[in-house]
Image 1: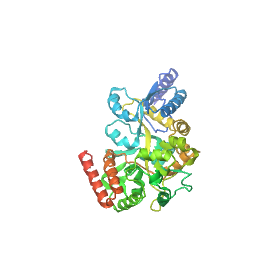
Image 2: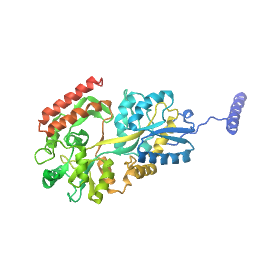
Image 3: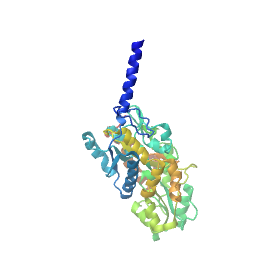
Image 4: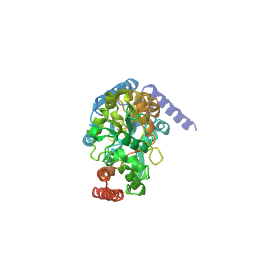
Amino acid sequence: MKKKTFLFSFGLLLVLLLALTGCAPDREQPSNGSGSTDEGAAGKPEELTIWANDEEEQLQAIEEIAAKYEEKEGIKVNVVAKSMLEQIDELALAGPEGKGPDLFIQPHDRIGDIVAQGLAQPLEIEESTQESYSQVSLDAVTYEYDGKTDLYGVPAVIETYGIFYNKDIITEKPSTIDDLKAAIKQHTDPSQDEYGFLMKPNDFYFTYPFFKNFGAYIFGGDVGEYDISDVGLANEGAIKGGELYQSFFGKGMIPASTTTDVIDGLFTEGKVGAVINGPWSIPSYREALGDKVGFVPFPEINGSPATTLVGVKSWMVSYFSENKEWATDLALFITDEANQQTYFEVAGELPTNTSALQSIEDPIYAAFSEQIEHGVPMPSTPQMSQVWEPMNNALQFLVEGEDPEAVLTEAVEYIHSNIEASGGAQ
């Protein structure tokens, strides 16, 4: 008994001596809500490297926020300007050589491809921290791979679309799809290049609500856990949606040859009552129309709020990073309420942090937050790339008067064939 007591006392004395002489192991961890328990790997690094998108305002905002993180944590943050379009190819080469970033930013619809290449680290973030973000943004960065569903990004920016309108032409906010049809009939005079409402005929991204609100869907399964063998774009609801969409085109309606340039040009000239677009168009529309420009969520379809597609940009932790916990901490810092407010003020992109989003006073941006509540993420599976072209072609056939059932059935056949040919069929 005395021998055991002596050993215990000696051990306790050794621990105290190690602590006093500074020989105890470094157990400093980021207090980021990541839930990490890997203490040894969480020692504070001297620096972190992030790849930020190279657009001027976005880069400026990130540099300002990174400077605050340096001051807070004493970690140098190297902000490298790199186009989002180039980051993945460069990471695949630089990452294994130890030359890549700790943190990079990507649109969520590329997550499937990024994960399949083994470039991103699954994240462990505490539930209480996740509650700071809008649910649709969290859904967007959640993805199933190899039988396991994980969070692969910290949501940073959220986008969707709705209706911009000229208050001098349309005096009442268009709240239903019939209101848009009425605008066409009341304010369209092709001989003067004047139109009550214009939309691009062959863009499935913007026309998704016409189909979704009648029960169509892109892929079956849950968000992030897609069943790519189940394509719901030719079901009964899709056909009804196709018929409604088709009714906006034809004699005296929207021309079947309408392009994006024509839409933006005529709208900014004050010749169009309403158009579909996203928050990225706000600066140019306001510059041209000033207080005349208004915005409303996408009008109701089939008696319900329109379900639009939502895009999310997120900060992703590189699989090759040696400082994954601290990279996660930095991502959470960039996207906390105060820093998302800073990012919105400088870069003009909508925040995913719910408190920051709800604090926006600008009426147009605030209306976007309402539409986001009714949005769903674009599918993040790589097979989504096989959907766009067949559906865009189908929409063009619809506006030219072809039978909706035949057109949509053929489009879905092409989608299945494309997925099989790409090696993505399950």
